Length: 503
Image 1 (cartoon, rainbow, N blue to C red):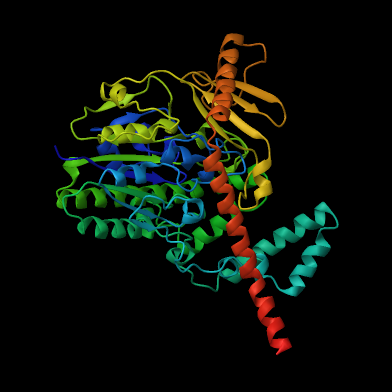
Image 2: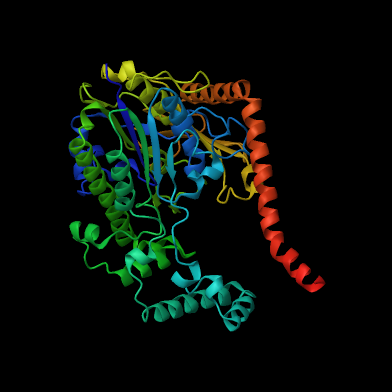
């Protein structure tokens, strides 16, 4: 019997309520909507962590993001993931990832891939070239004015306002296109690479992982995508202004002025991903590989647009726009089904996909396969655990990884959010308050609160008991070696300068 191949598509920042097959009214995912009609659709798919660096260990390695310790990022050297598991089973493996630094070889995501391209070597414009308000683009006079303005909140606000509009005036003389302003390779570039790789294969089974960044900020979708959504009036210059304004430290009412246009930019990025996924599937059909391929599409986390005053996807809360993502799995011979009975944690995705292609999951995977259940159109009800380190916005700085834990425990009806640092928790009734505007009183639904608290405690104990000291040690050694290498690189110019003086 011929082995099934596997394609995993992950889309950065794609929230569940912005795809048509989960109810979005705007036609941003026409192809995925048609694919969903013949797929297993998970209406309550929940990430195991957010943002990217807390989400992907679960997606790729079926491992809780903090299981090796909060100071460990990425995949440990030698840690089993989907890729080495399938390569050992005779699969060709490849990954084409759109330049997300947290999914690089530095953090172990290259392991098990015959071909691995993260596009971090692509030419990107300097920040100061794209944004004159960046520190590197400020004159000495402006820097002095900025420092002087900080003497009071009023003068600081006045300076920031004047300098922002001065920068907008300057950029009117520039002609930077959307393609020039984009910080990541667009989805068509990634699909071109994948198509080329697929065309080189013979009849052997394969595993292909694609990661798209098009909906990620800054939002610079192709003009074709904007036109398709009826947003042709958003020009390159307008998109640049919108991104600059949206990135400012302003009150919610002021930011709200441009929210609809920002969402249009975001939606256009999703549309472009959908269009390129359609092109990829047509290629699979052309190469006679589609009928033997399991095809999964999901996201690492969502995105916030001021619903609770926040933008982007900072790990400061675990609200639904951030943790609920789309998930569809199309498998040959599997009947279409809409799985809405319970939450499905992406912790279980890797073992489920492996069973779908007939492979055995590694013993140390912390999730378990649900393939038999979902093939029958059912899904058992178990709480989904999401966790991160609160306010860890820059994990490249190791000290930022050591803040307190933030966790949510969610089933199809209730969600408990636990802030370990402030020793607080909030219970939400997702059926009656889907927007999470009103946490329930502390004395409400005590049985449900206790049940979810017990699930949180069981999770923490399980992670402590299952911690692999070998994987943790290898991760620490890798981080240490990278720190040493970085220090050597930084010291080289000084050494050369000293040598020239000594000579």
